[in-house]
Image (cartoon, rainbow, N blue to C red; front, side, top):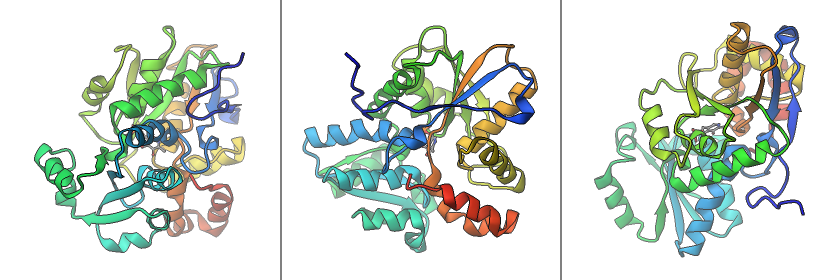
Length: 319
Ligand SMILES: Cc1ncc(COP(=O)(O)O)c(C=O)c1O
């Protein structure tokens, strides 16, 4: 009997990636299309949030409270998923109240999420124990979830992701972009013994390795960290934008500029630098994040014109 997947209840689509500049490289590339698996919380979000929402419901929390930037994929998905599961949501957003009008937070508000805007200074306290204790006093019925959903529950959900992606593929490497490290920790915990995980850090963040190690459930040495910050977290420059547009033309897959675009660009650099052996295979994980494009129209038009924006906007789904 076929196993029913408890989180996404379907198979992850796996797509072969054929790119002209890599045609003689001898490396077999494919992409796990997690961007296609859920209408409200695609990519890694469904895997992280599903166990958190279940935990909140079983333990009778009234709300889920979390933290994020003004264009946060996590906040967006949490708002939509919480609404669907009849649980209230609250977000502490870094920055000014004017951000409430952006597409990410407009969706969140429409889904019933309560937003509080905090200064950048206060936002830095988001993991401070005293700050969290005070917050819990203000919201006694809320389950407080760290930025990006990063938690043991999210890691368990992402271990399931490794299993889902591996069902009918046997890649030597899996590649995932990383922010807080929870997705990478979960994936690493769920890998087959011979496989290696490559974790692409999109931030200049010296603490990422320690954080992933502290979140790991198993398989401590199965990942390597790769730098993919390309000049900063949300910096979209012309080179990145044209890389994404070319990728879209060749594969029909839209990447996001903050996570998957950086990972794919770095993987290609590695392949061209012959860091992989002939015949090896890599599964790139599309971790979603496409909703974030909606705040970038002006930037895209400035860098590559209105046609480029039209092309991208055709592919944007509610992510
Ligand atoms: C689209 C996308 N990819 C990857 C990540 C990185 O996930 P993590 O924070 O678990 O490292 C995020 C952030 O949650 C994200 O929004």
